[in-house]
Image 1 (cartoon, rainbow over the protein chains, first blue to last red):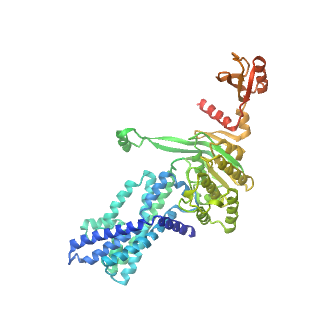
Image 2: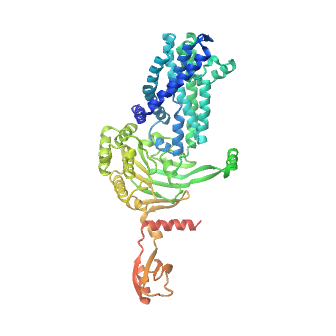
Image 3: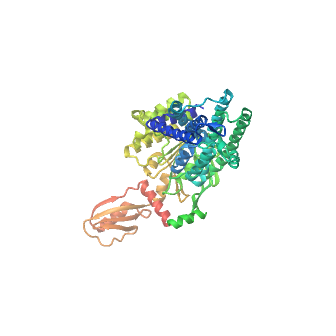
Length: 262
Length: 329
């Protein structure tokens, strides 16, 4: 365990080398939230649509923008790079689990983001836009669990894409497609409660809503207390399913591994 | 008990066919035609504990593929491979605790971190006990003179410094076997010497089994009593350096400078290779008579200014072996 935590620590301190980026990220997040807030103000005005007020919609946008900085599906870029350069060889000759190495490395980045981007953005957003409080204590506690599920699912999906790159030797198209799926079906931009019913069915069949819509909707209390349990169980089900899938793919991927160059 | 045993080992790669040009690249999208390239073909050999083996062959002979299979990161296509009694790719993690691997062309260090931090991280990854770690670190720091730059980030090191660090790191966890893939590539003479001396000590005194690939024959001469030569994935020689020299070294090149044009030299066992005016290079076939005898035969007939006999270093022995291999195809 100590080993893996030190991977996180290394990733964290590596991020410190690019400190000037922090300001850009803060600005980027501020602009993203501002645009969404303005859109919802224009769309909803002072009343409410489908029982949702402007204040709730702005809170929804803030939660989603912050969540995006924390999710872990970005690992496919890292794996792709080490496949292409062949540096995956150096990672595989160590007595460590490759997926855990990736997870903890990425967690180091996430903790950095949490401290230097997410937390400051949260303060700024609170000051400029305001946020509604969580619907209830239960909702808030379940929201925290949902955040954890979002992190795990995003990691597993990113890892799945990375493993597919062993076959295609390129992750770009896959990641591009993934980003499309996440943007739409996670409900990050347009909450699923605004979706037409046939699209709601599709969104419900995919794991992406756990990476945006579900945590935010739980926070706002749009999901009634009695449904929370099932939603968390279903999230756990997605995690187990994805774990089995990546395990199967991994054994096959290693057989296919071709170390590039020398 | 052999520490590494290889029996009929083969590794093939699938090379998908690509067509040239823009139309060709579109065509490549729709065909799955491929050719099988064999990087390692039916190899059989074994290595005993404590040996130092040079693994050499021309570019593309499958040396790196072999190192990668032995270290457990590539899966063989067929055949048997055992390292320390286990199949490397099946027991990748256990295997990696027992071996050290150095890729000359690929760094395993953390680019942004000081050398010291890389060592510390290595300690956690390999779960090295404090005492062992301190002992090995002191040994490596001293022998490889790493102390001066241990606080520097890896990216600021020269290639020679970095290579010393890579080798030190591969030995911190007391591996039984050390695999080195071209450890001296691109280094200056001093750095090469230092590394060779160190590897010799590690092999002779610490009894670490060493398998190294290289193109620099001096590496072999100074570190490895035994060598395995491969070509196009196949084994072409396995034995001592001295034996190979005997096998191939019965020819010598002799350069003779004449005072005046000697005309045609007609001595048995002597063939003219090239001439630059009065300076002529001959090939002497040694098994008939000694070089000295042949030279004196020539000197008896012609006025000889100077004679130099080419030193048969291992480099020229190997060159001859490669030439023979190429000629036999």
